[in-house]
Image (cartoon, rainbow, N blue to C red):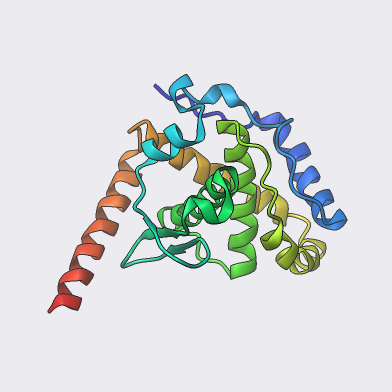
Length: 203
């Protein structure tokens, strides 16, 4: 059984302060001091074993990594050779956080969904033993907006971090087949919508 305590509650304020500081200093997020790797069963402590267990629909195609929302509900990834294995896996973690948005009804502006996904990606990297992603293109793109928003709303880091942690918990529970009844219901509804959309498109 997966005991999903990714970050001890007493460490979350320090984690959020670290994220806020990283945004102001334009640095990548450093999650290692806060994330409990032992919350994963040992069989998931390599990246590919974990991603395979999550079981998301991942297709290989040309172009940048991206999550395609409903009705597709799938992730498009370039060939591994384009990015290198570790960067490819970090990008997949990022897109899996986007995939979890629909389950948690995280309907927010792009700058906010990207902050959540970057935090979640950094958490997953620690959990599965990936080094921090060396490609900082996305965070460099958003640093200015994040700094503007986090200055206006001091609680933003807490909001995004809390949702990111829930998103990672969803991925772990999905990998462990331990989704809650509510999550299973949501997932079933998503798949029903997907099948309906496919029939209508074929139709």
